[in-house]
Structures are given as structure tokens and as C-alpha cells.
Amino acid sequence: MECFPRSTQLHLYLSVNIHPEIVPPNILIMHNSPVLITDFSNLAAQKWRIVNDDVMGGASTSQFQINEEGNAVFLGEVSFENNGGFASVKNDESLNLVGFKSVQLRVKGDGKRYSFRLKPQSKEKLPNYWFEARFDSVQNQWIEVVIPIGKFRPTYRGRTPDPAPTPDWSTVHQFGFLISNRQGGHSGWRSTGFALIVRD
Image (cartoon, rainbow, N blue to C red; front, top):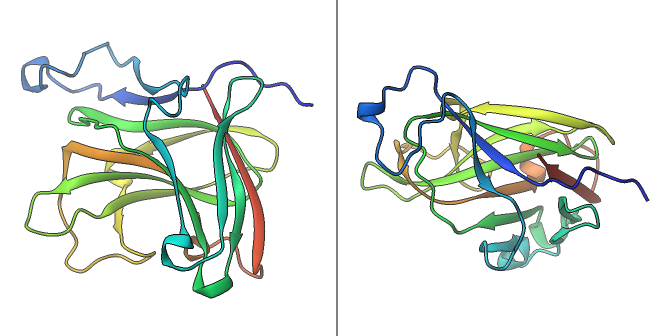
């Protein structure tokens, strides 16, 4: 069995040019140091849950678990049966991203394309859509993915909603990972296994 460092963290980075007087009091200024979102130490208490295409009649399956080395593992099988084609894991904890400039992920994957997603409330009277940023994993290699907050784009069932909402980044109430046939990078398969490992 391959051994991974015993560390499992997602980070946010503070913007260099944020002024303390305009940052809400619940955001800690740390001189551009990373701020921990979650350490995956207790998946149930941290409100992680699986949402797959079976909610729409699909047949995809997935799990979110901790391996022996303490890393978070998102794995399963995406199936196109019954017009399905996605698997996801999400966290229902709230985040206030005002004053942050990027999300940093350290992941080891299988060469497939994934997305990291945030669900803020809309500033208009529009539905609260997911905002996602897609990234390509590298087969059996750890990589660092840095996603500027401004690069997250609204999505609804793989498409950009029209009109597109303006996100209120102070009211993010869900975040997580997704793999989908609509993300591109998966041409030619009807059913595929996947595995994404996340660590510090």
C-alpha cells in the first residue's frame, strides 16, 4: 500500500492588499498565511455528505472516507445509465470568504477532471447556484491547485445560468467536490471509476 503524509487540509489564502479595517471581525488577518477550512478529522461532525445522480434516477455511486494515512478520499463510479453522469461530496458548513483571494487544494488523482464548488447566496432575487472551478488531476501525482475566488463560475446542471447571479461571498453555505460527464475531459466512456485524494 502506498503511504501518504498524515495531513488532510483545505486552505484559503488571504489577499495581500486587504486592509484590516474593511475585513469583517470573524476573519483573522494572518499576514497572507493560509487559513484552514477543514482537516477532515471527523467527516460526520463536519457535515460532509454524498450527493450523486441517483437523486435524479441515475446509477453513479461514490464514497468519501479517510484512508489509513489520514487523507480524505473521494472515490466511486460515474455511470451514464438512466441519463446520469455525476457524483459529488459536499459540506454544509458556512464560510465567509470576504477578504480572501484564493482556494488552495493539494490533491492526487487519476488524470480525470474534477471541480471544486462553492454555494453562496445570490445578491439578487435569483436561485443560489453553485459556483465551480474545474481542474485536471494528474495520474498518481500530488499537485497543488490554486483557484482565485474570481475564477469561480456559476453553474446549473453543467451549464451557465442566464441571468447569472452575483455571489455574496460572505454567505457561502456549502462547498465540495464533483466529477461529471458535463465537465469535459471524459469523452468516450460510459462508466468509469474515479479516485481523488486530498491532503495538506
